[in-house]
Image (cartoon, rainbow, N blue to C red):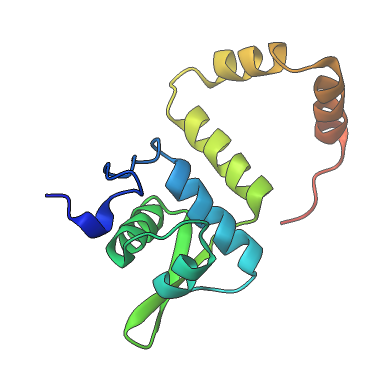
Length: 133
C-alpha cells in the first residue's frame, strides 16, 4: 500500500530505480567516503530520500555478493568496499571468466574486442615481470 507520504508532488508513487542503479550509488558513496559507513551515514550522503530499510537491504545484498566488508559499530554495521573501483572491475571480470568453461575462447574474444591501444597496453603489462607475491 502506498501512503500519501510516499508519493511524489503530483500524487503518484515514486518510480523505482533500474536494477543496479541504487547499488551503484551506494557503492559510490562508500568509495568516496574513504572510511566505513553505517546505513544511516550512507542515507545522508545519497542524492534522494530513501527508507532506512531500503539502504540496509542494498548494503546487505552488496555484502552478500562479496563486494563489501562490514564490522559492528554500535547497534548497526559499518560497511566498506573490498577494493577500489579498478579492483572491483577486475573482480567482476575474473568472476565472469570463472563462470565460463572455455577460458581460452573467452580471453581470445576479449582481446579481439579491445581497441588497439588497450591491446598494446595489455601486451605490455603481460610482458612485464610479475611482481613477487
